[in-house]
Image (cartoon, rainbow, N blue to C red; front, side, top):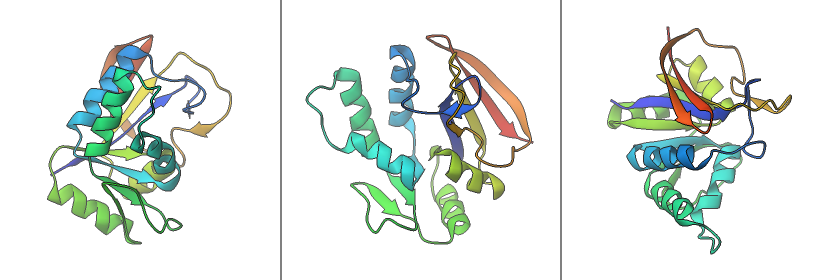
Length: 176
C-alpha cells in the first residue's frame, strides 16, 4: 500500500511561495532523489500548472535542473481539477470522487505518492488520507502568501527532524 506524503518548502511564518524563496543546491539534490524514488504525484490544478514548467526542456538549465525534469517526467501524475479538460504527458485527470480515486491509488501501488499543494492537502487531510506531512522549514519570513495548512490544522505528532543543508530543517509529522 502506498503512503500519501504532503511536503513543501515553508517559511518560518508558515507560508509556501515558490517565488519567495527556493531550495539551495543541497536541498534541490534531495528533491531530485525524492522525485526519482516516488511512486507518483497528486496535484491540484494550480500547482500542476506551475510544475508543467518541467515538461519542456530549457536550454538554460544546468545539469541538476535537467535531472529533476527527467525524474519528474518519468513519474505518473494524477491531477485533481474541475476546470482542466486535458493534462500533459504521463498525467491523468481524476474524476469527481476524490476519496475513492485516492484510496484506489493507495491500494494499487507501493511506495510514496507526493501530494502537491496546500488546498489539495487540506481536502485529503480532512478525508484522513495523508499519512505524513513534511515541512522543509526555511529561515525566511514572508509575512503573506499561501499557508502550508490551508484549512483546519490536523492533530499531528513529530516523527522526525533532519537538517537538510542551507539552513533548512525537514520536520516530519504524522497524524495522531
